[in-house]
Image (tube, rainbow, N blue to C red; front, side, top):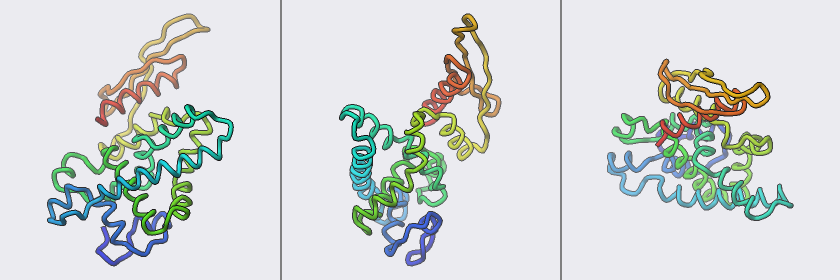
Length: 231
């Protein structure tokens, strides 16, 4: 983390123009670090609260104008998928946010820098900081740019179903290994087969899943592993 007053590297990396680096320093400061260092309220919980509301508005606006013929119930479901922990954690991994977030020693030992819920909160806090400094319109531009890969998955119908990618990013960041998949069973006639896949981490099974294709079975196995490893 940069010292106060110096340009904040994460924002520099993703080309966000900022003036108040202290605000973004707060956005990546977890309560555990603030309490440990005696920083009182200099942590990201309030910014997370604000960023959550701003993000929901931005995504609601995007969906309203991008899908003009979609009913309210479907829009609500799409919005939930776009702002869910898995989507936010994916953005955090792409930003390498774990490298910059400030945690107390206990959180570091517990693997907090790769915990999806903590990283998702950090993304929301950054959005809160963006809103405070730049206002809604410019904040919206930054957020929509950040969300481009997620919107692409939405259009391709794979949003929140690509658990293989999520799982790979998570286990590589936390355990420095790559998950391996294998088909362990298949049943049924050729025109109606059901496959069962298993995902292994360091040669140990961490999830199983079934599907009508090998890819679908692997996704199901990755989802089970993701749910087990990211409580």
